[in-house]
Image 1 (spheres, rainbow, N blue to C red):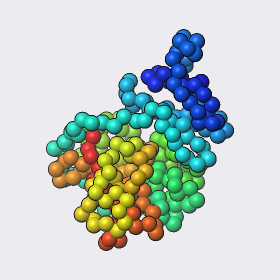
Image 2 (spheres, rainbow, N blue to C red; image 1 turned 60 degrees about the horizontal axis):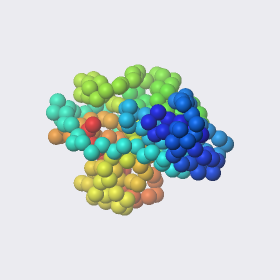
Image 3 (cartoon, one colour; image 1 turned 45 degrees about the horizontal axis):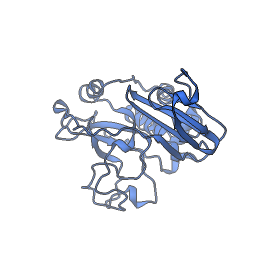
Length: 264
């Protein structure tokens, strides 16, 4: 039995991925603690709460990473705000290229989960012009699956990269616009509308807005600036893989570099 604050009670077998909602009165429960995650050797229940009425719940296989949504994340239908003060701004200009991608040869055997370590590798290179293999960042963090905020913060501290936690759009804007910093941000990719080059191999680099791949789950990206009209972030998305044209433009540039994702 798994209980959450707003999704209600879910009853069934985690190891068989057979869960169904059940009424509290049917279960004979008055209250249940909220916050702990249920887990077994073959499945994990993942709960994410953004606001009081914005909660998602999923069952995940720790072996394959496959996810089954019980309560999918909410997708905003509201118009995105425009940051007029941010239009055209970018992080401090560097004379060297600091974009990195998780499908590169230096990412190691768990490249599929290395969006976080790759974002840290970009931050190290941005701040210090020091190229650290992505696999080395992963080895420091440990594990072979998703990485959390605490993992990335610990790695940045280890590599002596000054950083702080941001908790609002205003603080993100100030970091990029006023201090010339980059921002590592964790989001759900189903929030990003697919672009015109979705799954299109070796497409025109002019089509660089929106999501270019099918993956729509938890992901780390780097924010480095704003579009000229202030409606989008300029993003360094690490989800690029060698040998697969879906992740590359026809000019040999990675689609994850300078991608435009909606502001908000």
